[in-house]
Length: 471
Image (cartoon, rainbow, N blue to C red; front, side):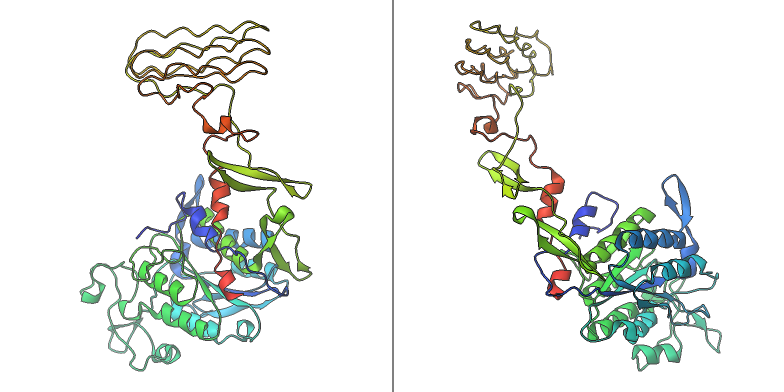
């Protein structure tokens, strides 16, 4: 199973899967979003950020500020951090209640939070507490949790005998676990066989408590988005949490030990991208723009924003891919572009094709290019020049032995078709009269864009929303 990290070109594919598609809410009601953020001591670790380093907690602060700058007023936001104010393994608490206009309060709470050295990771307990928080459990509202963590569920509290204990009886009661487990924490050098092969950062016996917490949120109809941050996350548990929360990425394998179902960020910029994509998925929906081109609109306190749709849409012809442009409310034909005179194919082991002849004056044919000298691996010359108005067509560049590429001139205004030259072995030219090797150049008013409409345009065609399934 592929690693769904935001560090690669697959970033776009991972993010667009969270975006809304052809769903249309009947009314605009800004959703409620509770950020449940890991404030364990490991968030004080440094992480690379551009040319320098910042703490992971500073990266959280910057990411949240960036999200609010873009989506201010688009939702009612709130903040929970874990552990709670007493630190160690205390259950997380809501620091800023969910409500309208709380962005500045949340930024201030994150910026002023002091993280002590003994803060641990009671993620499961905190998610259960979130499921009991009235601010996101009101029926009839669109409520969401964004859960971010940089490590494993971890609570290692010395018991009365001195042996490590993974959870208190109060924890077990909160989690609905009748028999409170005890175990050694998964640290380097542990002899606990349950820890073999697992990240040395967590308590194996309570490892999947975050999943139990997300399941409690699901029972209250609150979907949970999951973001892992850094290199020490428990991928299998977070995969299962995203699956349980109703927000798995396409291709999710909830049993994988690599990130598969949730967004895994490995840098501050990736964390910003992940949080931004999630909020966009929650606060936006698809809409129909000019010429019926699909776009998105955002729900705000004052109503739906205007539909933000592109002016072009991808299309396909028998000769390849192109774009249609919307102008004056009318969608034009599928348009592609080709240059004047198709280039020949790659040269083979023999000499290169001659350079193209210049276009002649009226009534005079352009001179053909001369053949190149022999040479291994030479590149092919360009095609023949354009025929002058009313003149005879120029002959394309001559082939240069085995592997030489042919080139064809463009058809001049009023002149006869241009001979594309002799197609040599390895070349991509076509000996058919008037063919420069590019199908699009022979399609009436349509022209061809080499390489198609571009990766971005086609990526947008694949927008499929998790938000759609809940609206």
